[in-house]
Length: 33
Image (cartoon, rainbow, N blue to C red; front, top):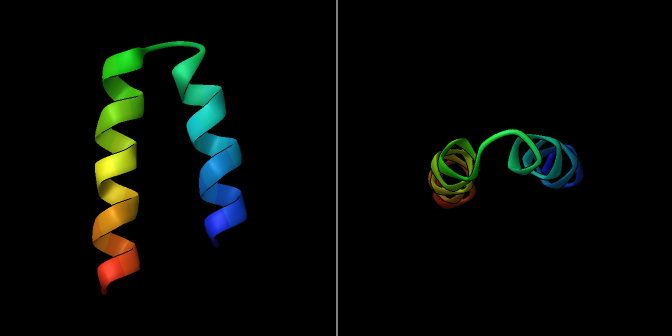
């Protein structure tokens, strides 16, 4: 799950820094859960 998130985050960061930050926050929420 984490690996997928890292790959997906990398792809997003290439398109939008804002989306990347939002997704990173989303991953933190999932990790805490």
